[in-house]
Length: 262
Ligand SMILES: NC(=O)c1ccc[n+]([C@@H]2O[C@H](COP(=O)([O-])OP(=O)(O)OC[C@H]3O[C@@H](n4cnc5c(N)ncnc54)[C@H](OP(=O)(O)O)[C@@H]3O)[C@@H](O)[C@H]2O)c1
Image (cartoon, rainbow, N blue to C red):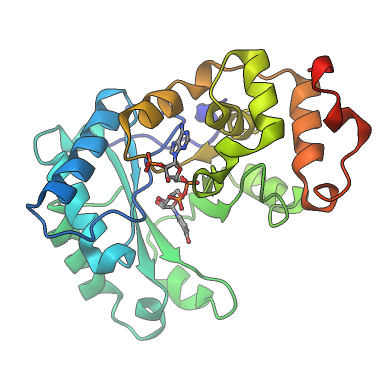
């Protein structure tokens, strides 16, 4: 993983940990309830492991996830944490971006964001309006990308990002946890003495992609934070990519069935 290719860093100058922290699904409980306390603790645990890139959005739990993040970072050094949030695309189109971002900052309890995405910009993306508001170039593209969902990320897209120094961030990198139960990944995990999720994350890291898994459970955070220690061989990267591409899921190539070769 060559994190330097993206140039992204915290305000204090620390490079991003290659594994980010997802927050979709957080923030549905009252702010000072046991459910929220567990989510705050999960984020603080991930931060304590060195993960310093939190991904959230105004639309997650109607702002609830941003409030959880706000609680999780209030005792730390804000400048050591990279916070990315997402503005729902309608705000760009209807001219309400500024008050919407101000509301995000209030929920997060901070006076700046490290990265602001336009959320779900497909189909009717108001690109011109977005770019006219931006004072900085586009620095990151967040895509649905995992071993189990490879079809949206083309070599052309990767080339454009690389050419422009745009960080490539993968959401749902574990297919919402399902990937940990995939028999092929489980077999490969045995070879590397790793957890299946670590194989899925290592596969993304090998492509200089930043995954942002969400984890409430400590064991999951620990596994995710240490996925960067797993160095998949080029042959295994190719095998697992080919085996899990959708067209191959129904009829597996021979090498997918020969776990003893892994
Ligand atoms: N831009 C967009 O439109 C968009 C869309 C979707 C998501 N996102 C972002 O991407 C983040 C990640 O996506 P996601 O939350 O949908 O799904 P995900 O990260 O692929 O999967 C999360 C699920 O995987 C489980 N998990 C985490 N680590 C694991 C491990 N080591 N072993 C086994 N299971 C593990 C979690 O369980 P526990 O929680 O029980 O630990 C949770 O159920 C989101 O949280 C959000 O920040 C962005």
